[in-house]
Image (cartoon, rainbow, N blue to C red; front, top):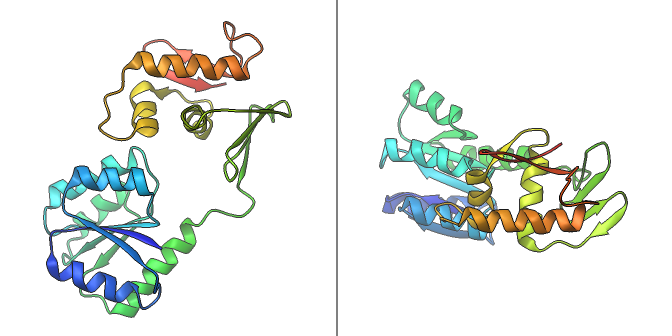
Length: 226
């Protein structure tokens, strides 16, 4: 059970681990008050849950929610002492999954965390993702890709690019979004580097890379699956 707490409150940093370890004794907790470090931890360690303390810096917290949602679907809970309905609505609309009042009874806090994790847990039959009318199959548990029943060996970077495109089948994914997802938030990768990986991906998956039928380019915007 890996949890990230984003807060500059010493009190919260002490009480959150104590409360969560009642339910998850082997809890691994990372704490930070820096937005950039928060993004890096989520990208690098992929925690089971992220907790954001709103009261310390409200505007920064809202912006951080938006940045996290640009590349990750980690279950996200905002902790606040505020009862302001508009703050709660804003946080939820920007991508937070739950809002918990800081003074909640510990067992209520645990119950809400448990309920959120249960809702966000992937179904056991959802490992295999099929698109393009079954032509392309991706096993997200084994990180295996097949085209017309034939397994295709991809590098980790190629797999990440393909997975992001598959999750947005039929929609254009911008070059910026792909770079952020594959190389991490704040990483300024050369667009030519992405173009080279797309070409290698096509060489492995397409009958003719020059006439792609799986991975398409939308000039000036990005890439998409048919």
